[in-house]
Image (cartoon, rainbow, N blue to C red; front, top):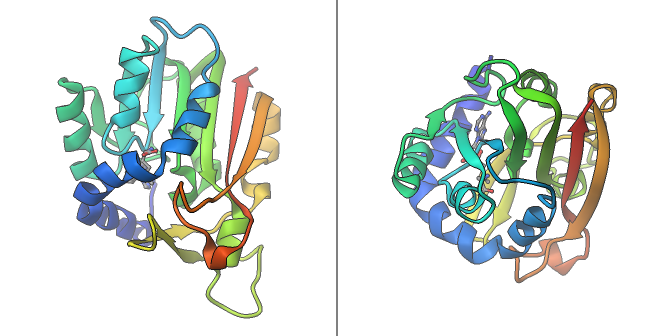
Amino acid sequence: MISNKSIYTVDQYNSWADEHDWKTLKYDKESRALFYTFLNFETKGKKLLDVACGSGHDLLHYRDTFGFKVSGIDASDKEVAFANKRLGEASVKIGLSDAIPFEDKTFDVVVSKYAPQAFESIEHFYNEVIRVLKPGGYFIVLATHPVRHFLEKPERPRDYFKKEVVVSWIYEHTLPLKEWSHTFNDYFSNMLFDNFIIEQFHEKADTKECTECIDGENYPGYFLFRAKKK
Ligand SMILES: C[S@@+](CC[C@H](N)C(=O)[O-])C[C@H]1O[C@@H](n2cnc3c(N)ncnc32)[C@H](O)[C@@H]1O
């Protein structure tokens, strides 16, 4: 289960929910559009779960444009309230990435966009995804790139491998986002390779248009992958 150290995440998103709701539409256009291109398979009538769905903009699109039957979970009760208002039904529950409140083998697709970097344990998250996803189902992730978190590490010399909370200033330096640093070893672990076939991968630079650039430098700001459950 989530530890006390992670509670700040809930408080953080509860306190930002209003601002985040419209800023994600303004600043996350590029990553959102790229993420949707990873859904290039038969989607109509399939059951999709969005883990850490935020205020539900994506769920609305998955339902109304792709024809998915949608469910979502998020740690923040304020984000969940926004999402349920937006979807017009109680499709979204309060829930955590390491204790997903659904039965085994419920979903055809599990997505998590711009969120796993906030989770304290990628391993516990993967365990839960493997449990709720049907065999042959898709798992699609977009997360902050470990290189970006490396650049944001507060201590010198920086230690890529040390897990610590980093502050990412996002949305033209208006919101300080506290998240866990993770390595590529965390994301591309044996657990992922043992249970899935990786079908697509992409990494993208942060640009001024999408969020901001740390010190005007060119570096990978986020990455995406699509995996099919064995
Ligand atoms: C940057 S927002 C992304 C929201 C949405 N997926 C999007 O792309 O706009 C990260 C979300 O993760 C949620 N979150 C953080 N840690 C979580 C956890 N351990 N379990 C579930 N949700 C979590 C936050 O409440 C927040 O809504």
